[in-house]
Length: 239
Length: 197
Image 1: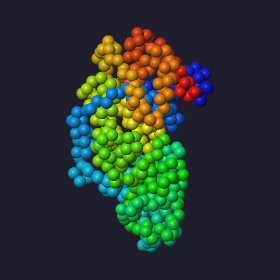
Image 2: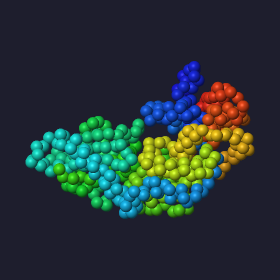
Image 3: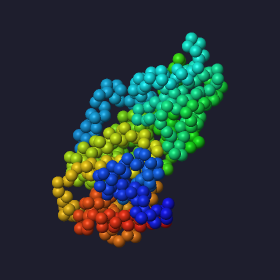
Image 4: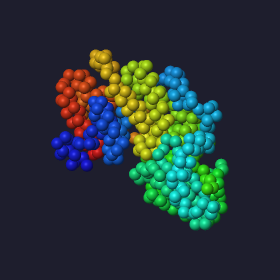
């Protein structure tokens, strides 16, 4: 790209704007315009990240300075003062799940009404043992609705929102109690997709079991366990 | 990119002493899962560096303290964004802090830009040990800056460390604004050519 860009009249084009943004020299309006482009244009985002990487070694000249204790206290007040003490100190992944579920309760109800019921196909009064989970997480826009149909031996996933990053995949996991997560496979891209359920595992998919989606390298986790952040999570429950 | 540790691992606590890049990765990932204990440790290990960044750019202690608060609020909210970044963990945190401090400094109208005072503060040469410790990340930028004329390299370094705008740089080097911009863009083109060589 550099050869073509060098011959453009503005000498360098977008890549140089990205460098100016990272360096921090742009006046306030141009800086705001560049910041908006980061969110909207993946190519520009990559150019910015490349320059951040190039310039990063210069940051070793920033001398560390211990901030006063009042700063951390103020951060905690801003972030956590509205929560009851129990919820404010999740000590583990599991308690943070509880925290998310609390936040997600309203979303579950809304999603079920809006998305699940029309999808089900089964007339009311003829329960087929299906289980449903609404997958959401605080701080993530990735949302799926999962429906497990034991008679079909598959999990249907409807994609509600949130895109996977370039070169990354979403992987579905099931977590029973405090056991380690078990992979159900990489989620194919698409609005409505299905994942077959290993018959040996089918009996374990019951109400209360968690489904979680993590962000993984393309093709799925190389280790057999989640390696990226959890972007969406929810409990299976009976319709 | 460095291998990421399991997002589900929560068992071992990182010791309070020194934290390597892998420990910081773990703490960021756990922070993205709203784990407050991890967030507290992340703060303990990185707040001094990030406060140094805020102080340098904002050049005002009270404002830097406020900026540091906002930076860690951002980190709590947006730690999941780290998963889609190719930067090393400390570089990502520094980028969050630097960008926030620069946003702040651009938005305030500095009553006086005390150029003379600013000129008196010499930029410390990058600490070679720290540079080695940063590991993994290419140090090529230093070699490429050395290929520029001395004052031009100094302008790039100063702009990066102090977050100066084109207007402030023009004042510092006593040249018209457009000249300053042309000057610096040429330096960036040369840098890019060297970095991609």
